[in-house]
Amino acid sequence: MSIAEAGEFGLIGRIVTRLGSGPATLIGPGDDAAVVRAADGRVVASTDVLVEGRHFRRDWCGPTDIGHRAAAANLADIAAMGATPTALLVALCVPLGLEASWAEGLADGLSAEAALVSASVVGGDMSSSPTLTIAVTALGDLGGAAPVRRDGARPGDIVALSGRIGYAAAGLTVLSRGFRTPKVLVEAYRRPAVRYAAGPEAAGLGATSMIDVSDGLLQDLGHVASASAVAIDIRREAFTVPSQMRDAASALGVDPYQWILAGGDDHPLAATFPPGVPLPPEWQPIGTVHDGTGVTVDGKPWTGGPGWDHFR
Amino acid sequence: MSIAEAGEFGLIGRIVTRLGSGPATLIGPGDDAAVVRAADGRVVASTDVLVEGRHFRRDWCGPTDIGHRAAAANLADIAAMGATPTALLVALCVPLGLEASWAEGLADGLSAEAALVSASVVGGDMSSSPTLTIAVTALGDLGGAAPVRRDGARPGDIVALSGRIGYAAAGLTVLSRGFRTPKVLVEAYRRPAVRYAAGPEAAGLGATSMIDVSDGLLQDLGHVASASAVAIDIRREAFTVPSQMRDAASALGVDPYQWILAGGDDHPLAATFPPGVPLPPEWQPIGTVHDGTGVTVDGKPWTGGPGWDHFR
Image (cartoon, rainbow over all chains, first blue to last red; front, top):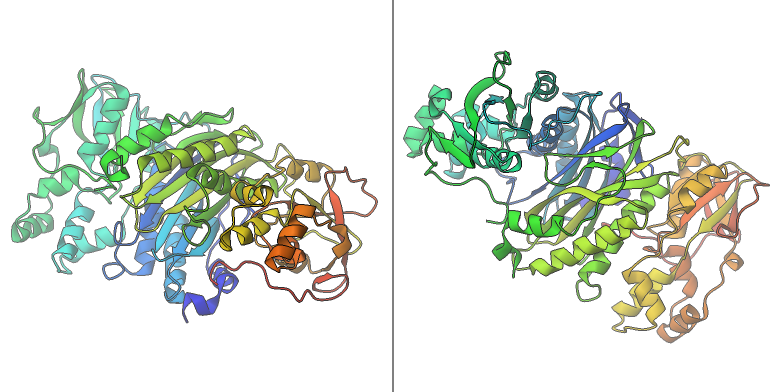
């Protein structure tokens, strides 16, 4: 059954029955607006939009994968403030000929990814459109902590990373060359594995700044450096290239550090910590903060490709 | 300068400088997520999406008007819960050839409409897309009051309306027939005049249910009737057809009650109140709640056209 056949209210009904309800949901889908617990007295909010052909391709990812990716991109932004996600709202624009089951699969993915952090989809909107578009807004709770911004990095701080990096970019290259393996890379692109707990964890450890790496590590650290008016130097040897990534890079003729330093979509969190803070093993030191401007690798500018610009 | 020439970060920079900051904004645009005051311990949240060709046409409305409309559609949803809006987040998908000044005009409209209720744009996302699409999420604060839902209408309640109705639908018909006057109707379509204060006002008066009329009065009251498991009867004579609307209807061969009963875009609020509640003049009684199901006009089913389905 196509979306046109299901009709707006028919499709909304089919989708709403698939959404769970998290502990923060006071009023979920079906009214003019949702009501979500914000016990802290503040709410953290972020919006990300995915456009077909630009951020995803339906022949590379199933609807449930795309739901996971759309939710993860937003939930990671909440975590990067040091907060815990509570709710998602989703604006979905769909071509009328799309199968209703595709939208249901998307809802399953959004809902399942949100459930990883006990959040849920509390509302949304739907429209027909020639371009399949998914705009997600995530809400979160700081639990009494101060938000961790991008502008607090200080010279002498340690730069550390929590979560996989380079896998999704490698998977994207694999898919774009027409391959379907190595599976670990392709699956990493299709469904990011984000350490959401790293956000509040870093806040608790006294992180001076934090960012969700979504457009490439060097580019995103560039935002931290610029907001904090500092320089950041990354050590290339801090990154071990996993064997499957090394093999794929070699077969495809790509420098694997291009995936690691300039690739997006894995959503690890990068944070800066005062020197001497004992970091748990989930936070891997990758560099240091200095006086100056810009981001370097082993003291030199990176000569590989740039990060992601949504208008390029 | 086109959006492609401005670049993603260039355009974001140009837009952010145009956005004000409301009293609820703790962290505005520029970080991974915004932080907004939610003093009540709960946050009200709603998302609406506008797609070019479906919800707006660039030859009928300038970018600032479209910004006002996009904000109003969302702010009205917050008001319809009895809450006061605090913040907007905006996901904007734009064709690369669009003028950067168009996006700036849109930002001006969003910002100005939000400022009417002391709210502001606190964050967003931007992407290129073949289809110009604006997804807005509004947040709001209940100020200690219970949210007014759609499901509380009880037999015997009075149905009342606050705000203009039929004007925007009439303006849309005027534009779609190739005319540009009467100006009052066309301007009502271009820029809704929503009584946002009516939401908290109705909550204070003890409203048993409330809804933002965005898809047509009868259709939206149908949602109230269905959620509340009641019937609603509307009195046609409760609506005075303004002279300019009557003249336009006559000239265009349209029943003006079609605009009033089935037209969208004005965003008046419709609420039900217990009998005997003294209503201020801003709330006009238009009907009553009964046992049964469905919505009737003077006791009979409405035989005019239906309301708005975003998939039709």
